[in-house]
Amino acid sequence: MIGCGDMMDTLARRIDQGRGVEKADLVLKGGAIFDLVTGAFIHTDIAICGDVIVGTCGDYAGVTEIDITGNTVVPGFVDTHLHIESSAVTPFEFDRCVLPRGVTTAVCDPHEIANVIGAEGIRYFQACAENTIMDIRIQLSSCVPATAFETSGASLDVHDLEALRNHPKVLGLAEMMNYPGVLAKEPVCLEKLAAFSDAPIDGHAPQLRGLDLNGYLSAGIRTDHEVTTAEEALEKLQKGMRVFVREGSVSKDLAALMPIITERNSPFIALCTDDRNPLDIGEHGHIDYMIRTAIAAGVEPLAIYRAASLSGAQAHTLRDRGLIAPGWRADIVILNDLETCDVDQVVCAGRLVDEALFATRKLVPPVGRNSVHIKPVSAEDLKAHQTNGTTPVIGVIPGKIITEHLEMDLPVEDSRPQIDFEQDALKIAVIERHGKNSNISVGFVHGFGLRKGAIASTLGHDSHNLCIVGTNERDMAVAANRLGEIEGGFAVVEDGEVKAEISLPVAGLMSLEPYETVYDSLKKLREAAYALGTVLEEPFLQVAFLPLPVIPHLKITDRGMFDVDRFELIRETAEDAG
Image (tube, rainbow, N blue to C red; front, side, top):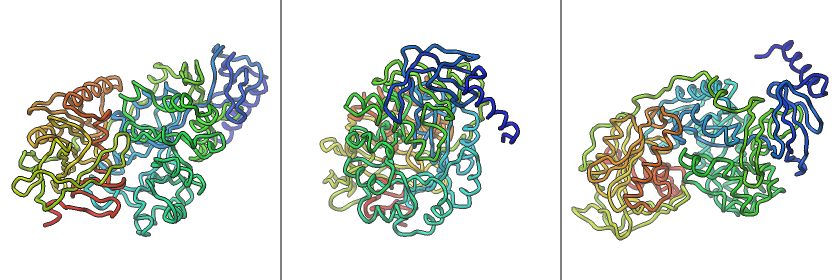
């Protein structure tokens, strides 16, 4: 904490440097600010004292001066909702990966690691956030586990959350995914909402409309990143909800929501990635990708740049950032070109971002090692349940985590439904991997297009059990057993042979390698999956979302197929049906 006397000295320095009485610590000279209030381009020097902008609309001298003549300057970008674990790298590597692209603030919900190892995982993120260059802020995970219909590695109640609340990087309560529980007034939901009623509370309400939406909002929830249509977005905006437009590796909602990203609406619109891996970041970008894509499609630059910074900051009560103006945090993106969001340099809290700056960080030891506890899996373990009549099949929608609830007549052998390539009905299995009950559930999924082999993942939102999609039980079993051997990750298997893999030993979610290495490994994995015939651009994160029982319409957990609309299991595991 800065003492009162020290703060007074800091304020005095800012005043003198802002007035030009004293040289500024850093001056960016010759560029043009894209003003997010008026939309004007202001040709001016930018003076910085410590981590705060102190001068614009004038000429300044600095102890350090950087010539940015010909460049355009905008505020640092804010990713308003994401799970860093889904990038498959640690917070420190995420820092190195996206900060040079202009993301100076990231508001994360570490519920992925919390579902595996509980409060220890959140404390790890808090410690990392104290030492990253970018400003990582934390929304405390509201739903660990997401529902009572799955087995997680840990659970967090309101007392666990309150014990974590006073950390300086914590903002409030993360996405309240159990919207049926909120509407049903379940005490476990209401007590968390009540405990955080004076803090920002994020929502998660896919396709929730009408009076039910009113009830959800009346609980004090103010944001939603699960909006997938312009019509849904407009209703939520009209009801005072901030819409976080999402463009992840699987959930791609930007194109559908572009019509509502206007100058008029932009104060209530922000941007987020939710789940985006280093492969997509390396090939396409992060928030910068969303900006240039939107502008190329006709969205007003003022609207999208405002959504990328100022609006997102204000949504999370971060009132010190989002403008290039005196008294605001010196998070600055220096662009070669505004329309293509071509980032040249980044200043974060008054510091020029480069590898030397990253080298000053104090790294935090990883947690959650050896978290994958599964018994050896055989092909026999992955036979489907006996059935009469049609079989429920999860219908994958490319670019969405919402799925269809299909019913198919599948071939039957010994009263058990079988894989059907003609209908693209492949087998899916979820294996409990926390060592609690050894549940295995088996179902069917349409939309992957695999013609051979299997792909597997220990990223299985949100309880992160082991999930496998395959064309035969033998390859599926080999993939499952391999992930048990390498502390979790992703694997591609064909004819009993592991064709590609990546180990994610930090809680079975994150690599210990640099993001460049992870990028290379993910590229090989994707190529191996394509060789199996998949028609999905990002098959691994698509697999990871199939066990998420709070996203309509049909999912699968370790306890069985789950009808999200009815919020109940269709077919339980043998143990549950017992």
